[in-house]
Image (cartoon, rainbow, N blue to C red; front, side, top):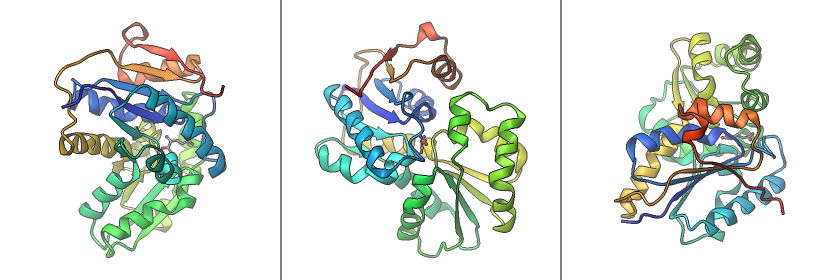
Length: 271
Ligand code: DGL
């Protein structure tokens, strides 16, 4: 049993899409979230820059005495997981990718055509393909597509309109058709916010979300290490490096609460 908070983080608002699962399944857990909204997106930046930003976030969460770090970001998971684990060997660190790859490996058949959509950094790392094959070498119909414009549009709240739909068509029509995709992995925690667009445009696709799988892994790991909370010490806190109107709107949309019900704070890491 451990009543310290869990630290979630992302380059921006995407990682928030894991939080409703935790709130529902583990209501006694206190969450500290950090979104680097001032410097998002990470996915098209160099690995060196992503690493520098990530280690600043790691230090911030360590100072908050978190019992677990959750990289609610595929881009950071694909580039900096080892760096974080080396820097914080005593803190369990959950990646967004391994739990998702495990679900694919365990639930897909060799004839399935699996499409992975993600940021440039995640796709270019090849981590998804590697992890899925490590866990199930019979899955060889794996296709990845980088969709770098999705995150900036989502951060801007451009979701329920034709600009987003056109962008989806632009990136994915040929990808889905040419590769006969039947399973689509949302390899970016921002993408659950366009899940309904994807469902409408490509009905019949099975969609697997890294946000949900990361949250499920949190529960499993807390149980395994006997780290579940048995009482609530404090409220959840949502830090962002830029408290823009968009951030506030999106956090309300994702968590379904008004601003005054949420503990939202500014934190500048770049000091
Ligand atoms: N949510 C992040 C991910 O899962 C978005 C990355 C970005 O900032 O480009 O990859």
